[in-house]
Picture 1 (cartoon, rainbow, N blue to C red):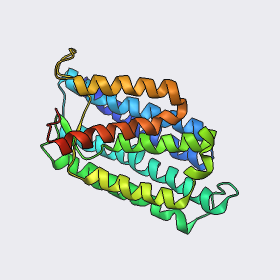
Picture 2 (cartoon, one colour):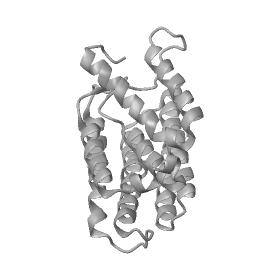
Picture 3 (cartoon, one colour):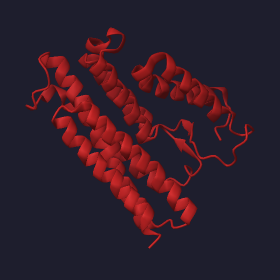
Picture 4 (tube, helix red, strand yellow):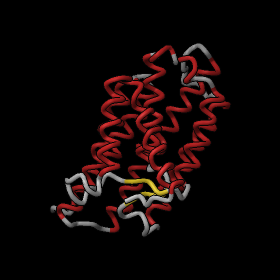
Length: 238
């Protein structure tokens, strides 16, 4: 029975992703973010449980991608769709089809491509090549938070369609690019070998203190800048 523990957590991720979609359609944005956060936790725990219990299986690998496609593929696409629709309508998301906002789901398509490539790529056991789909989703959730709370009076800026189309294009590229990016799989708890991870964690905590809800997208930007800087400098991501 223990081999089904990771799969149960994966299914929980999928369930919470579906709940997030319903919450978004009903404009319960904070509730949707709560479901997404739960999905992120379940996604982390299913991998950790599989490693601890040593019960990796082809079924679990495929199931994980199906769940991630919903929570970290369709959900961020819908968030961007809603924000773009808000930008064009100016009167609130009505639930009616907004053709000009449909390009938001390009991100969902590239998320699917990213997940399929990840399943076949044996180079990504300890590090990532390209931006992981959970990180992309966290960035998009951060935009939703800034817009919802009008953080630093940026609400109207966040919903500007040109900005959001640009976000879709950049994230879609980053999901499938070959830039190495560090993961949070710790081989040991010491400083040596984890300097980049611990430094990133310290910066992230500082940003949370300074920017509060606006820190979410900023943390992913810092993650990207660190990895791109390491890549351009020729330093190996470990």
